[in-house]
Image: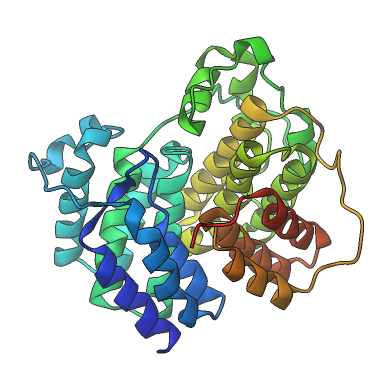
Amino acid sequence: MNADAAHDSALDFLAGYGHDLANGFTSHAPMVVEALASLGRPDAVRPWLDAYRPQLLPRPAPRLPLAAADWRAALGREERTADWMAFLGAELDEAPWREVLARWLPRLAPGYCGGALHGALRVAHAARALSRSETPARVRELGDALGAWAASYQTLPAAPARGASRRAPADAIAAVPLQPSGERRFRGSIVSALEGLAGFASFAPVIDWIDASAAPERAISSLTQAFARVYLGNARDALTTIVFVHGITGAAALRSLVPHTDAAGTRELIRHAWQAGAALYASFGSAAPDAAWPVGPLPEPATLAAAAVAHGDDHAIKLTAACLGEYAQLPDPVFLHAARHALGALPTAHR
């Protein structure tokens, strides 16, 4: 089975399952099957799904139709995830997917961190798949992905200031204030820690510390490079590895999102993706970027891809795909070192 057929078959299989897992966390399945396809491993899609299936929950039915005039009031209402998915699926029935995506990206950009960035990430995977081939399964997945982002929408403290000093992402991330450990509000999820930044006034100006109007390709590479260095300096255990994986993948997701919006929308996406990654650092960080630069020979991209598939962990697969994509854009070894580190830090998936 080729990559397109394997991907669409997986999406059809997943259509009967919901956004949440039995353990209360978010299903990564739609994102992982797209990542496996992008890694050129369609043979791994079905075995991975078969192993992941016991964690999946049935897809819930919509509860209350979402009115087009009242969508803002429903943002961030996770109990309305199924309603959001139905609403955006209906929009995709009426208009081309690129038009719907262009309409919703500016609306959702301020909530980039929502659901620990999984909403934006899922939309990016869906958009990348549709850019390769437009199929009913992929259009349906885009509606579900947009609905998941809208339902998990969450904003961060921001104090925009005109004329604020702009810095390169590498310099800006090094200056991000770390929330004192006694003030952190981690309660078992990344979302809870990000909510805890509400009382950390020093974080609010961070959103305007980078130049979001730079050429998107260069800006995205600078962001992923900076967050990969944060990862290497701060991923100390399984939890912090997962946390800082999202800084890299969240920034890399921009490559699949910015082609579908205008210049103003692109600036907002970059601005809020930066803010989300900086928030992960502020609420979980403990060391400067690059504090633990790895030693040893540089791993080969093909070796990393094969190792990620064999490893099986959803975060390991998604990070490896993102890092290899970023390395192809900017051949900085930081991306390969980050992917290799995650393969050693994350527990392998149960088979």
